[in-house]
Length: 61
Image 1 (spheres, one colour):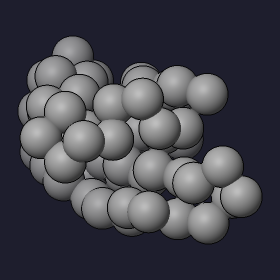
Image 2 (cartoon, rainbow, N blue to C red):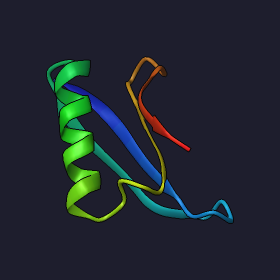
Image 3 (cartoon, rainbow, N blue to C red):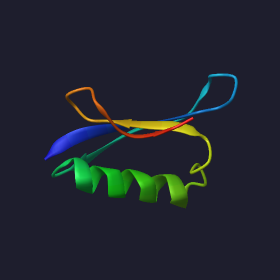
Image 4 (tube, rainbow, N blue to C red):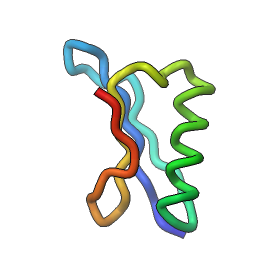
């Protein structure tokens, strides 16, 4: 399992969410990250989900 990093930002740049979760691969992490954003009402906020290697798997501006 790999650890992924999910962050949500307010328009002024402050963090609304800073969370880690585990997934088997990038595809699963993208699904889990999108689900967490939807459940917490952050789908339309600026957000990113980064893999442990540093690349982004989810991004919305």
